[in-house]
Image (cartoon, rainbow over the protein chains, first blue to last red):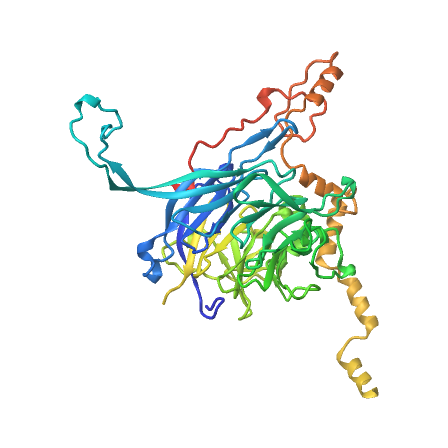
Length: 445
Length: 116
């Protein structure tokens, strides 16, 4: 069976996490992100913890084993807090992780919960000093009178220790809940976005930030839309985009003015008014926006589709892919069980030829833009034998269900894949189910 | 010109026919909307409007509001203290929360199972 990209097929590589069905809330994965080389893979969870996996170096030249990732570091990034002034609980859930490009031996990442962004330094220690003059090996101080000679301590190898330390804490700049962070291509600044405002930070400065977008109306009764996601352009350090709950994208240029409330470009697909329903606005809300690696396109994810926008064309997307159109006739129950508000993310592959997003029943979808092919795959323990090829799945919308198809009513809406990530340079993908992380790679012939 | 008209009539429905067909076939979205309105007749017509958004902005549990607490205490001066329902509600109202009602919010001391 051919998949996207010609005859590319996907194989199971690894699954991380517990097998038990009783999922503790803290274990719910809330973000997944590869670093810029793909060597490191970070996950954040509802319990405020970050786990970083590292690609097994020895396997890099063995094509069929190159997607082996092992635990590299894990730490508690955020803790639950209580805002006594507003009587509000601040969740420790990690909303987003973004890696900084590597500049020296250490790795840096930004992690954020609803209110506070933290810069973490992850460094390796593989040597320790030995042979102190004044200290014993166990650290106790020697009696100076017993020392008769002088020696130079030497560095000896030790078992690798990976340490994570918080280097900056960027706090108290968001009244509303942070949904996005994005590192600028200038390597100096980053943005953080909440429901109504976007702030620009300098990575070195924690006690202030610039507000660059503010859509809070003077009268909150007039509130009609909120910011749902934001991202910097991959190459143009003055350009960023933010999406809204009404399905619009605004491209902003920071050179135009200090406060970018006035957009440079507004991307919106005109709606057919005769098709408008109670659900129209809810399902048009954009849950994720991502620039392509080449910076020429943007991808948005709304409840039922993925859209590709050309930066030069504002009036409609250049491509639209239906993720799970069969859900359109289930919107009533999806509204009742709140699933209609699920925020799915989306991602590009390294050369922007394929896009991927998650769905329900632990299904995820890939759309090959060039080949005009799409596939539905499943992340499940049943298909987790080493190097097992994933069989394409099909959902039967109605009528006669063929063998191997699954009917819409049998879909498990509690098994959602909201977070997926694609290795920036290779065909290795990380797919997060509720509490497990699956790693797949393309089949090597 | 006349040749074109003939073609249109044989290969496509006339506009009148099409409209009739459309009236019979309601979009799945609209029929879902009808279902929802039947179940919740009080649902407002502006779903994406302020109410939904404001609920979203206020996400985060309200536990203890000393103002509400004192108001409620004053109100039920003459009544017995009601037993608190172990339920997360957005507005405290007349119900006085007690420390036992509040779920414990401790940081996770357990390592992530992904690292196991």
